Length: 300
Image (tube, rainbow, N blue to C red):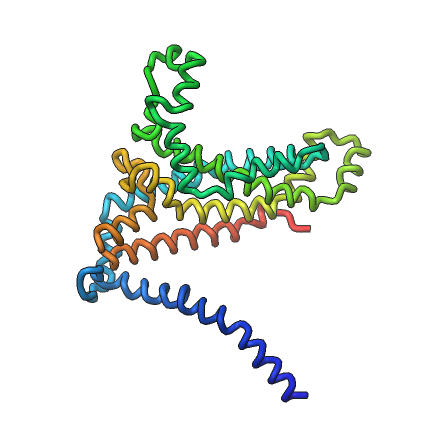
């Protein structure tokens, strides 16, 4: 019996061996390697020289780092509440038992499965200040005449560039978040709503006292994933600003700055230090959320 159990255990380890090897090669080794590189002056053009914590000291004295941190924080937290609120509203609408509702769910989810690069290019055309659809629409309804302006430089002005990217990101992520909230809504027992109706609770009261508490675990998950994804945003800013983070660094995010330092300036050591600071920030924010979830997340 013991020999059979050992044989089964050995076979089990053989099955998971490819996954363990892949994890070690593509996850563990890069983490250890980048930790070492962050303590060196390593670059793609020469040998790495040990510099200790100098990269981290330089990082916190770097004005572009603080600009990228501010932009990343603004992007992440500005899109958080609108994304969650609109996704919940759409999930409530898509939770109705109507003919053809599945088709509308598919339409809402379609942007999520579309390439982020393709979405960025499409929105660049929409935002075009000369012949973009948005400016043409605003002109047609008299918006420009009302405020005495000729056009809006959506991606060409520091005041509106990041906001334009945020609007696009909210639009693209709605379908995915809607689907998660829809799953949470369909998991709520109907008997709760029936009992509330018998007690005389109105639609708003049922939503506030039943729906929101029971979908709070999913809300918590969505918020965590959005914050993690927000701090890792790269492709939107890269594609829509030509990789520069302009105008005037207004769309320079932390990952874009990391890319510029690592693959344009070839400062691999400095970029690795930036990556570890980003990792630490995400970790701290995640721990804080888990620490305070008991105050508002309801588990049955």
